[in-house]
Image 1 (cartoon, one colour):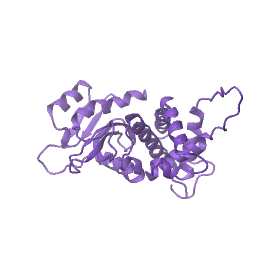
Image 2 (cartoon, rainbow, N blue to C red):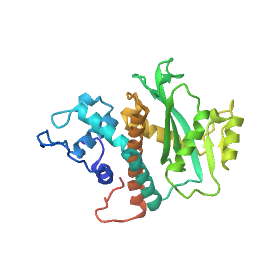
Image 3 (cartoon, rainbow, N blue to C red):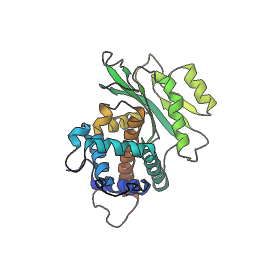
Image 4 (spheres, rainbow, N blue to C red):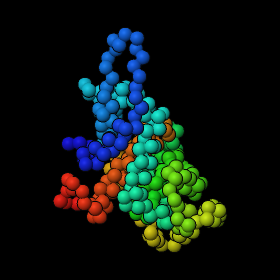
Length: 277
């Protein structure tokens, strides 16, 4: 059984394949082993992301763990995962539309047993190593950007770099934007930042009962990340650039899944399933 349904992974692979730069064979005699096909390595990375297994566990006679890591790093250096995420968001914006007038940001702490650049003492796991993801979503919960940081970083200082993720896409932002935040952001510093950006805000107050408001969508997106992708739920990568690549790939899968679900309600096309995906 594939790690991700073919209805989702095939359009993602078609776009990703178009982004892969051509490889020039510079071997003088051409006597080396043939290059492992990109599709095989891509499928292995999807399995690593979804199942959370070690590269050695995913490797088999078709592709070694070293090849998976080497090809992954090549694609990260070329910026392919970030570009894939951007293209998926642009497609969603054109076909469905993003609710950029209402943004939500929240932090999510997960285990990071291997330590690394984005690991720190977790305040919710007896001081063990953990990683925090500061997640930005639109009004419908579509992930717009994620910042990875050590678990002992407070949510409030991560708000500015998280909101800056919007600049990657070049969307026409609405004149009035409301940012929905929980009580962890209830401070004058946060309000000054949002005022300087020209944003309104809805922030839960400290010391009062939990106020759900419109920010429940970011909690749902955190659940999509943790329950759908074991590599994000238990972060075993040590380098931030690799963590960011897996997050971008997970976001692309979430966006395409939501695109198919929302598109099924609004549009008809050849081969459209009789049942809602």
